[in-house]
Each structure stands twice: as C-alpha cells, then as structure tokens.
Image (cartoon, rainbow, N blue to C red; front, side, top):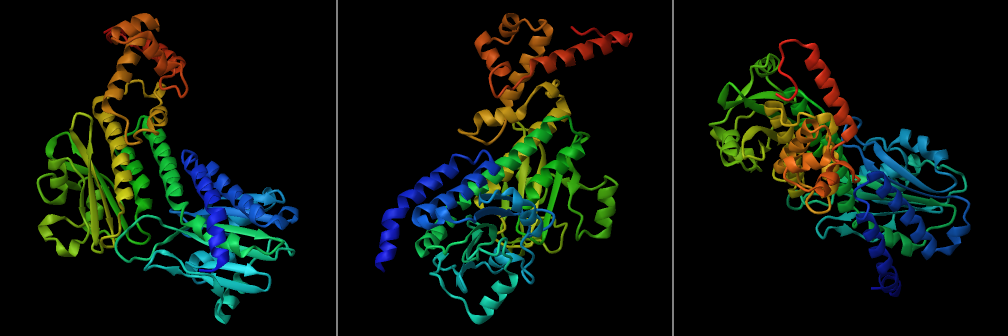
Length: 487
C-alpha cells in the first residue's frame, strides 16, 4: 500500500463519515438530500485541493436514473457550484445519458458501461467494478478504444473545463449471488483545475456509501405520494391501479408484471382482478380482464395460500415449482411475490401479485418490505371503500400520520389510529366543535384531542371538517324524508 493511500484513509475518512451522516439526516426529503450530496462533493474538493476555490468553473451534479417512462434519463438531477447552476439545469436535464449504444456525455458513458470515468486534462482514466469483492478497482489509463468512446461522448459545458469525474451509483441491495449491481444514479464533478487523485479515490469510497440513503429517500418520496393519493376517496379500480403503479417500478427493468385483486363481496372464496399489466397476456385473459370477469380463487395455488396464512409468499424460481402452485398469467414469468392486503382486524381484503422475468434476485429484502408497506396503506383504503370508515376523508391527513411515525416505524397507518380519527371527527361534529365535550365523548383528554387538530403536522383539519359538516347538514335539510343529522 502506498503512503498516499494511507494518508487519504487517515485524513479523509472522518470527513467522509461526517458527510454520510448528513445524508442520512435528509432521507425525508429527496431533493434536499441530492442538494446536500452535490454540495458535499464541492466541499471535499476544495478541502483536498485548495486551488479549486479560485477556479472560475466548478460544477457538481447528482442524478438518479428514472425508474419509469424514459429509461436511462437522470431524474431528478441537482447541480451545485460556480457559476449559477440555473444556467446549466435545463441543458443537463434535457440531454440525459442516452442509451448503452449511444451514450450522451461522460456521465452517460459511465452509466452505460458501469465504469468510473475520469478526464484528467488530455488523459482519460477508468476504473471497473470488481464484482467478486464488490468494490471499485484502482484507476487505470483508458485503452485507445475507451478513450475514443469517452472523447466522442464528452460534452463540455465550458471550454475552460479541464477535468471531469463521473462515478456510477450502483444498487446497494443484494439481489442474488454474484449478480452485477445495476447503476441507479451518477455522481459527477467538473473543474477548470485538475482533480487531485486523493479526491478521486475518496469519491469512489463515497459512491459506495450513499446508495442506501438515496434508495431510502426514494422510497420515502414514493410512500408519501401514495398516501396522499389514497387519502382521497377512490374507487376499487383506482385503489388497485395506484397500488400497482407504486410497486412495479421497483422490479428489475424488462419483464415486469403485476396484478391487484380485491375481495368479491358476493363470493368470499374469490377476488376480482381490478388492475393488472396487460403486456404479454393471452387474448382470452385480456378480454376477460377488460370485461371485469377475471378473478382469482382464494382456495388454490400461491394466491390462496397467501390469503389463508395472511403472510407474503415468494417463489424465487417458478421453473422448480409445480403447476398447481401458481397460476401464471404471463408465460415469461420466472419469479413471483404475493402480498395479501390485510386490514387491522386481520381481514384479507385482496392481494398484490408482482412477477418478474428474472429469477431469485428480482426482489431484494428491502423491496419486499416496501411492497408490504404499500399493501398495508392500500388495505386501509380498500377497507374504507367497503365500510366507509373514513367518513371525513377530506379533513384527515394520512401523510401527517406517516410524518409523525416515520422515525420509529414507517410501516403503516395503524387500524386503531383510523378508528380513533373517525371517533374524534364524529364527536366534534356531534357536539358542535366543543372540544371538552368531544374529548369526554371520545374518552380522552382535551390535550390529546388538540394533538390531532392543532399541532404540526396536523392530522385533522377542523375548518375543513366544519365545512363538510355544514354541507352535509344542508343537503339533509334539502332532502325531505331523510333522517336528521343526529340520527
């Protein structure tokens, strides 16, 4: 080991750990986390190479590769540095990385080749991933072909830029044995001055430390979006489609399939398919689904077993399972994950089925845990459709519940919370929004009641609840023969 490597570890490791700690503190806000990461790169560069403080142009950017729509596009992407990043934001966001055959920019080439790329003046250097030891190999001079590819793909934002480092962010989660990790994002920094080799080595170490907080922030963002959508009154079909849209992007690219079925109120032994991916379906299955005739038996196969046991079931390799074990809608499915939608009273209201053309590594343990969280939220929404337990949904903010619990559990909106919220809403309306009487009716203190209506983040919006109650009372008065509000 060279002296410079020892020095880097002794001097820069505490700074690296401090930066990683800052990232974990912002997983509740993905854009803010990306901003912190982009700013951290500049701070590390200026600390290791003070000559960059006086450089006219120093740009750092962090991007995640989109899971949806245009695969390979960096969204969102944050820029920091000099000059004002707004000058380059539209340019970078619209260019994107291209594809593996025609990458755009050094960032695109780095993601497409899953290789670290370094432009050092007129020289080009690369570093490959050592998948056996799961780490980056040392930087080496690029081969003539690699140098030509990078030079052809390179786009200089300013003519004065002399150096650029692009490091792919690889999937931090384990998805099978000895499988190459996919790129999920990119770290990039450019400067008018040459980048110190110590800084480049530190960036390789940093890239392996930021994967988990980034994925946690992405899941947090998706969970909030889902909870906001499910907080509004939805039909069975919309709940199912929302659930499917939230979980499918976490499957490996390529052959992604999914189905959501909700319990048939007229027949307890079956679930009606409300949403599913239609690519690759046989014509008769497609016509039955569009006509609303496609259903799943709760007595047979993996569907029935998941409902009977009320537990998720995972088949990592369908080629080794019997045909009776699983009813395949798609012929190219290799692995399947089935999650029952269980309400707080342990009732199974439906199921979520995710299938992939990959085997064994299609779902990580974190993906399964996230899918279970999403299924729990969907079960609350599905139960609300069946029993109308959230009568005052417009006044209730389920995202606030998640915000309140995220530090401890971040798993679900508990059933007892939903019951208590409904009881509070009814009591407030019944007693004319007199808090002491409503608190007595709910068998709680006024202080606890205020926790739900006045603290930040507020769970129940009293003003919205007043407006809803007034509209309801007015509509009942206008409709002769209807029971009054108290009834």
